[in-house]
Image (tube, rainbow, N blue to C red; front, side, top):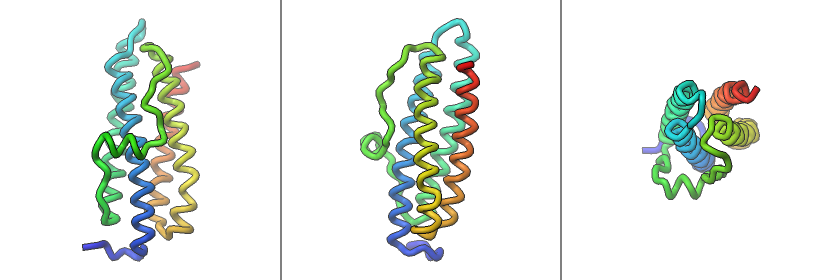
Length: 157
């Protein structure tokens, strides 16, 4: 049974597709953050290891929230690696070494890319797709990513 929540079915479909791409981005970023957690080396290993753990745990919650928002709109969340790689706008390739600074630069760039993508879609969701709820939802996600980027940038000072 499709939700009857005051958003036309085509708009819900478009919103769910947008959220599916976001879920793919979050999953790729989560995976890259896990890689950093598992593979970081250097004099500050333990602090970096714990820092990346806190970040991937936060991303895990974000992924669950995005998938549940897709389901609330009556659609299915993409849930295969093949789907995620087809939908993401992030690169799976890493360009840095296994030191904390290298991982942080790479993750920071991905978070900032997600922030820009979210910011570009806030008004589109609210105005064109008539989905203030999802617009508000991604505004909150944008703020979460902004705080996460602040934490990453603080390590580069």
